[in-house]
Image (cartoon, helix red, strand yellow):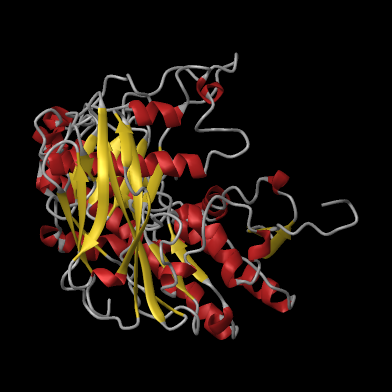
Length: 541
């Protein structure tokens, strides 16, 4: 900062008139915003503008494309105006040299060479528009997928009957989204746009090699969201379904990140800033809410202070009006929690009339069976225990990230309505109330960390009461031949009032990384038979 210092952030672009690359400190010229239009305008004499039979005009490029059946103007006169870009789908008339992705990568070689030549640590952010609406893909990538479209997989969730027990609704004009063959035609365009991005990422990695930078450069490939592609009768994003909320997360740093390693722990893009600072030796500057993913790459996460292998997301599309009012919350879930096989979607307002959702992703990978919602009052004790468990994780996450502005606890953050999001979520309960609930009937310990001659790992047991009244927990003990490997702390016994829960931290510490064969937690309480929770640790995780 300051006039006597060089601005750290620069923007790279390209001047088609002069054939020169441009690097500038401020984006006021708006050249950085998009190279697509200037590129097409400069080469317009080489591009076909007239429409042929069946073609429509792409409202982004202004050039022809051949629509597929899902396209909003398929079979209509070219005079019909398009309603947005979502349902502009098909094969582009533009060659691969004139696509959005191609125009965006033009400045990259020059930018990378400039950064390397300066001899300083550098960061290059490359952002692609694709894959994104309009889903119009160039023939070089489109045609080979089109020829193989019959082999594309369409999920059973395009049948939308399961949405009767969901807070989400199908797209109102989406009858064609129920037809697998029509959906496959859309997939051709979407996958072709992905393959085009993949091609240019390959070019950039080869350039890193040529510049001698590959072995000392952290490369991160990710995205902000996925695409429903007709699943659950929906398009684009704006849900917590797997198709929309999951995105690629690929990290590469030779010598630091093992090639081919797969980490099956849910994470968040919120952690990327911390990850970059960590791997570049700048963690001292990290003031973000995220945490470096290095703990998973190197297997150093022990879960010592809280369950750190959980993914959270929040959805709230409200913006203040002219008077500063946010208005009412949407009647769709606002919070997502993913832990192990389970995913909870819940509103952050206690009284809002909408369905909450619990999925078992292992048994129901296409998310078609909501275990709560309409089933909440008849759900099993195990299901209710898991819903309460994930809700408790959401409450704890909000408390950890409340911040100085008390975003999750101060009602002022919601126009003064309600009790604050933490209290609202804690009070929300759209399923059967129980005199006692427990989070798990068995707990499998994750990968231990070898520390001071021992393998060490922590997991957590949650228990509570949702029914009015008081639960008396008289004892919590570990029994079995392997019980000496475990220690309990946190809640050790006492009263739990209706609507409250407690957390027990379980420490596993062993000189050898052997499988646990015989260990269980026994909870003695005032509401009937003891609760038994089996403890499991596999050998050499």
